Image (cartoon, rainbow, N blue to C red; front, side, top):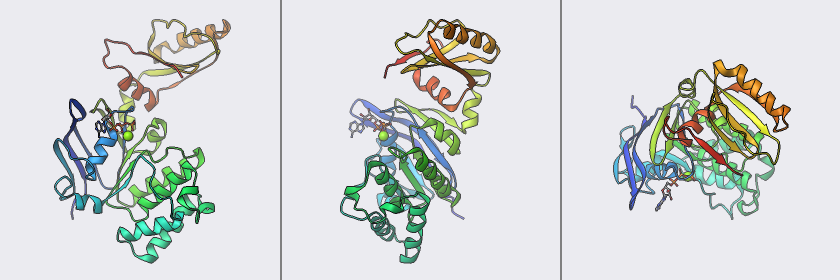
Length: 318
Ligand SMILES: Nc1ncnc2c1ncn2[C@@H]1O[C@H](COP(=O)(O)OP(=O)(O)OP(=O)(O)O)[C@@H](O)[C@H]1O
Ligand SMILES: [Mg+2]
């Protein structure tokens, strides 16, 4: 039996001086949902565009099973389904019509494509827009229709570039279920996302990309294991109050809006709670919580500061 694993092998893409992808190596096996995470400009879209032949790698190889995707962009288009980061141009088609059209262009038979588009419309709860023209759809519904278009007749590799953007929380959950099902049905799914917490629940493995380089890879649990023994102390600052000076047991911290997230050692939990309560007593903070670290903490640590010698102190003002 053919092995339909997708492989990126030392893929480098330069735009002039900029190395948007720097020797990226990863594999996505059939049945696997693989997350690609990283900050804006990290090089995620650049990588996926090379897979389907929209960009040519400066060096390195991209293969899907026996096919060389760089040498054979026709095979790439046939074997891969791709939801681009930008919205699909579907203005003058009805929602279900466009799903059926794409399914058939991709080689699906009428009956299966009809059945599958009905299923997707139900599963994503977009029935009320079944016949609405693309130009009249809201951003989130258009995103869901785009997803249904590219997965109505999925290829061996399904590439989704930020599929959950603009989608409401309830439908986002429905969408994740469908993404999982693509994997369960045997496709390899490569999924670009900024939503670390959702990815943590739904992907089998993931890579974190920063400045064009793959800086971490593994299952969500294996990546979190690097932070074993650490806790997250979350402090909701009273509006208008500056970030207090961090006590020595705080490893690093970030602030977004009034929310300060600090990483502390498990053995310092009692001290951390004492300090948080003191901040509340002083009226500096309104609320606090101490919890196990999530993948988001690992992500911030890995992408927010580069070396252990150089503690991060990212003040991301909103
Ligand atoms: N065609 C291009 N010409 C020159 N530079 C480009 C081109 N496409 C992308 N870049 C640059 O390459 C880097 C990576 O961009 P890319 O779109 O891959 O990032 P991304 O990880 O997808 O970011 P985002 O999360 O914002 O979508 C950025 O610095 C971007 O400006
Ligand atoms: Mg992108």
